[in-house]
Length: 130
Length: 119
Image (tube, rainbow over all chains, first blue to last red; front, side, top):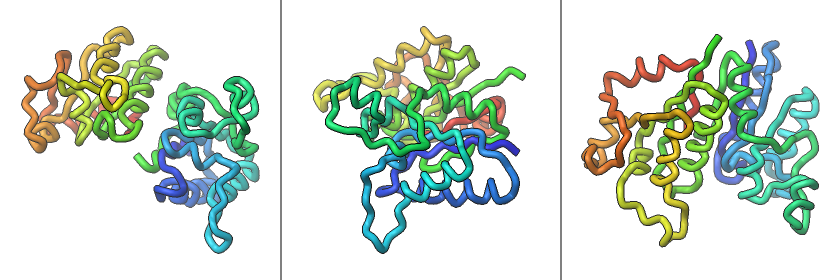
C-alpha cells in the first residue's frame, strides 16, 4: 500500500514527529511504500539542523533525517510554514538576506500543493499532530 | 478517478496558525480544480463569527479571508451544528454562505470525499 505522511507538530512541543517516525518505520518494515512525507505547521521544525536536545535524550531531527536518507524518501517541508517559523535553505536565506540557513540535507522546501499531490498519489494519508 | 477533498478545520481563528493553514490547504486544493469542501468543527466554528477585529492583536481577519472562497469555487462553508450548540453560538451570528450540518449528517458527508485533511 502507498502511504503519504503529514506531520503538523514540532519535536519540542508535540509527540507527532516521534509517532510519525515510528509509523514510518513500520510502514517500510512491512514492505509498504511511503510516497511522500510532508512537514507542515509546527512540523517544519522537525527539519531544522540547529536544534540540539540534551545528550541523553533522543535527537528527533537527526533520527528523522537518517531515516529519510536511508530510504531515499521524498521529504517536503512547506515553504510558507517554514519561512514563518525560521526554517530556511540556502536559496531562501539568500533571497531574504537572512543571517543563515538551517534546513537539513535530504529535505526540500516546496509548496502546499505537494501535500495535495501526495495525498492523491497515496492510498492513505496519515496525519500526525492535527 | 476524480477526487474530492474535505478540509476539516477545528481550531479557533487566532489560536496559532492552524485556521489559516487549513484555509490555505482548501484554497490550494480548489485551485487544482479538485472539488473541495471546508468543514468547521470544534473551536473552528469561531472562525465564522461576524465582527472580528483582528487588526488590534494584530492579525489578519480570518473571516474576511474566508470570504475569498467563492472565487475559488467553494460556495459554501460547512459547519457542525453540535459544535455551535456546545458553544452557545446561534447560526445568525455567523457570516453568510454557511451550511449547517446536523450531527447525524457528518459521517455520510465526510465519506462523500475521497481525501480528508484534518487540522
